[in-house]
Length: 216
Ligand code: 3NM
Image 1 (cartoon, helix red, strand yellow):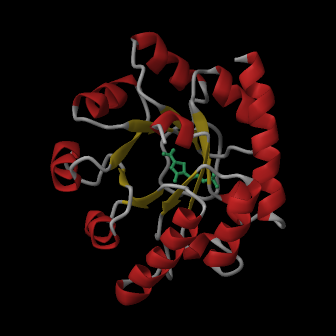
Image 2 (tube, protein in one colour):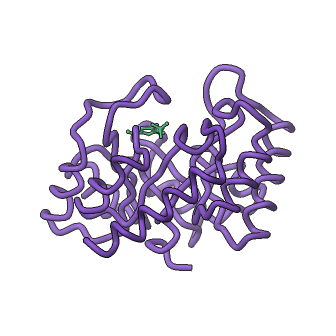
């Protein structure tokens, strides 16, 4: 699968984002049509050690059973241990070049917030960049200032053409703005992981994405 195809509907989550078992949520989200998954085990009460490894393996098996690539957030060693498809890192997670060296040809995603960070991520060998926060979010406390989808437009206007996924406060009602700004897809945590019906939520995103594509 191409990276830009996979980025269309990117579910990001770990056990702390879920009101129910993470495996149930991911199973339902897969049925609803997510195209990529990132295991992001963070925050108070997050799993560590064997439990973290076990959940990563269970979620990766669910994803791979459905042909969906499995990415690990930050934890390069875990990604290598379970043989994930890729790693996603933030600006404070060490050198991008060093992570690239460790993971070889696995996919590498980097969180960016402006043109300069995007430029450096591309130069260091990222396969895709996340750009956020698109909108206000309650899910991540230490977010940068919300600049909205226009940051993606600025990054595209600068000439950066690698796959881009928008993140932060995205729901079905505002995702179109992210797509028309030049994103290949949307990354969401709460809109799917905390939805009453994750399957229906993912399905609604997919339906909206199809109509966005026609107008992009
Ligand atoms: N990164 P939700 S915003 C993990 O701006 C993350 O880089 C962000 O959660 C960034 O979809 C964010 O629930 C949280 O708003 C996204």
